Amino acid sequence: MAESTVPGDLPNPGSFTEAFLVYEVDVAEEQVRYYGEPMDETDSVIRRLAPLFRRRGYRVDIRYETGEHVLVATERSTGIDGIPWLNLVLLAATVVTTLFAGSQWYGIDALANPLALVGAWPFALSVLGVLAVHELGHYVLSRYHEVEATLPYFIPMPNVLGTLGAVIRMKDTIPSRRALFDIGVAGPLAGLVATVVVTAVGVTLPPVAAPESTLVAQIELGYPLLVRGVAALLGEPLQYGAGRMVNPVVIGGWIGAFVTFLNLLPVGQLDGAHVTRSLIGDRIRVVQRLVPVGLFALAAYLLVAEGGQGAQLWGFWGLLSLLFLRAGTATPIDETPVGPSRRALGLVTLLLGILCFAPMPIAFVG
Image (cartoon, rainbow, N blue to C red; front, top):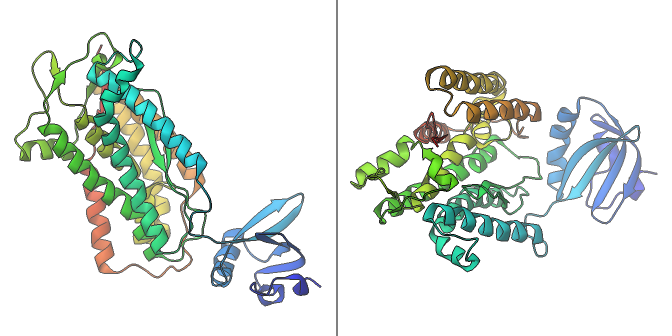
C-alpha cells in the first residue's frame, strides 16, 4: 500500500528496507514523509540513502516526531525561489549599522545630523565587501557542486564594527570530500583576496583625525601579520602621531583578517572544520577538542601576562567552540580522500589563517 502512494520519481520503500523499514507514506506538495524504523544509526542511514534520493532530486533527513521516526524527502533546489526578503532586510539593516559604526571612526556626529551617515560609506563598503566576497565564495562553489545553500545572511550589530559577520546555510547533504573541501576553502580564500585589496586601498588613503570623547577613542586594534605585511610592502604606516589614525577603510581589512582567522578554526561547522574534515576524515574529532583548550590557554596567558587585555574575547570564543563541538561537523556521503593538489591548497589556506591572527586583536585602553 505504501509503495503505490510514492511519486514515480522517488524510490519505492521496498528498495531500501535494509536501511529504513517503511510502514506508511505521506505525500505533500514538496515533501514525501516515510514513517518507519531506521535499521541503523541515523547518520549511517542518511549516508546510505542520500545518494539514492539525490539522484532523483531530493534530500533526506530523519526526524523523531510524536513517537515515530520519519524519513523526510524534500525536493532539492539550488536556485533562488522568489525574492529573498530576509536576506535583503538583514543586508539593509547591516548597511545602516556599518554606516553608524563608520561614523564613529570618522568622527561624524550622526545624532546631530543623521544624513551625515552617508559620509561613512567607504568604511561600510569595505566591511560589507570583505564579508560578501567571503560568503559568495561559499555560495558559488555550493552551486558548482549542486549543494543547496542560501544567499548570505548579514548580521547587523550596533557596535563599533557594525556587524557580527555574515553566514550562508547549507541545507543539503555534502556529496563528497572534494565538494566539502571546495565549499569550505572557497570562502576564506576569496575573503583573503578581498582583505588584501581593502587593506591595500585603506593604507594608501589619507589618515583621519582620531575621534575624541567616543567609544572608538578608547579602542586599540592589534593588527595581524597579514595587514602589517600589506602596509609594509606598500611602505605605508599603521600608526600616526597624536590626533591622527589610519583611514577607517583599513579597519575593514582588519575585520576581514579577524573573520578569516575565526572561520578557519577547525571546529564545528566553521570553514576550518570543513577543510580539515576533508583532509583527515574522522580524525578531526581529536583536532576539534584542542581548539577550546588552545583558546582558553590563550585567554589565561593574556590574563596573567598582559593584564587581561584580550582575555575576555578569547575566553568567549573558547565557550563558543565548546558549543560548536556539540553541533558536530559536516559528514560527506563519499569519503574518497582528496587529491594532493587539494591537500596542498588546504595546508596553505590554514597557514594563511595564522597570518590573520593577532593575540590581542582589540583592546580597550580608555
